[in-house]
Length: 171
Image (cartoon, rainbow, N blue to C red; front, side, top):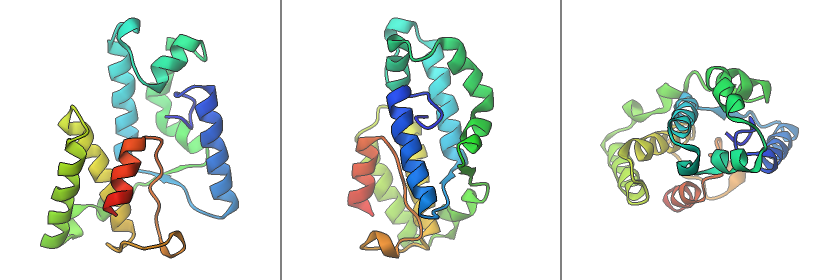
């Protein structure tokens, strides 16, 4: 959301610098379809609420006047295009990296991750989506938990501090 400007100007600037640095390092940037749907869900939830009841980075950017509601509405139908315009590919093969490939140990690992995430979320669906995204990254790593960045095949990048913390401790 930050990269396409929905988190406001400052957050967009940080996200664009991060992506530019990753590209300079020849790192392919992907976003999962799960995250695309989450962005759409966030937009829908935001627009359903009265302005005074809105929360999160997009609501703050609206209050500061970084953009108007019509910009948020326009992003909904164009979110994939906006992401790809920033040089990020939608990971169309993402689903093959999810749970069907894991054995019973992998399933138990996923259940453990989901239970850790649920303790931080009010809505089960949000925890489930985030667990799926983390496990997609884990699947791209072939189920390996590298001890250093240089041996990793895949990174999970988020501005959600809680999710990053749980992911770092877990993987």
